[in-house]
Length: 165
Image (cartoon, rainbow, N blue to C red; front, side, top):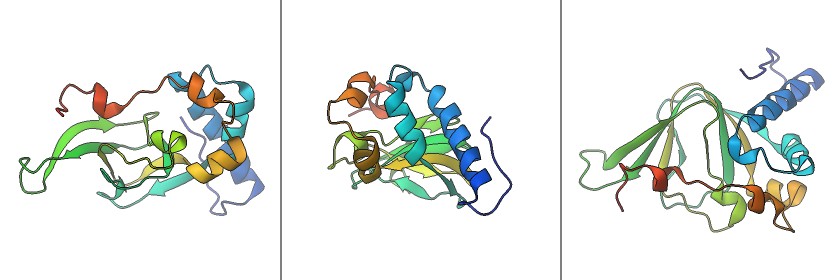
């Protein structure tokens, strides 16, 4: 369970420590990040920030549109859909639900031209730890390819048998 501090000042030292502990716990729970060197992991902890999505139905990522951030869900749920003109009135087909410690948007860290293969839609109260690509490259870096080399890249959409190309 993430450490959530009741303070409303995101820059308060106690809140910063609580956020860092939460990020450390979340990163440690993700299998794909377990083999990453401590130096890279510590850099991630320093630059990731909590982001809460309070609006039910808010699009975090839209299929085919540029995306520049990596998200890890700390609490709440999100829905993954793909655009499908035959899917009914909204033109989207359900793929799967995402929950605690699921992640998405990792492609943005590896390619500046990243475009998601699916939509990710928040439910009210979704809390994610987020790092944008610019911060990743500036503060974490991956000049020697360590992060990408250790990342056992998975794509939710490609793995899900309900998604047909």
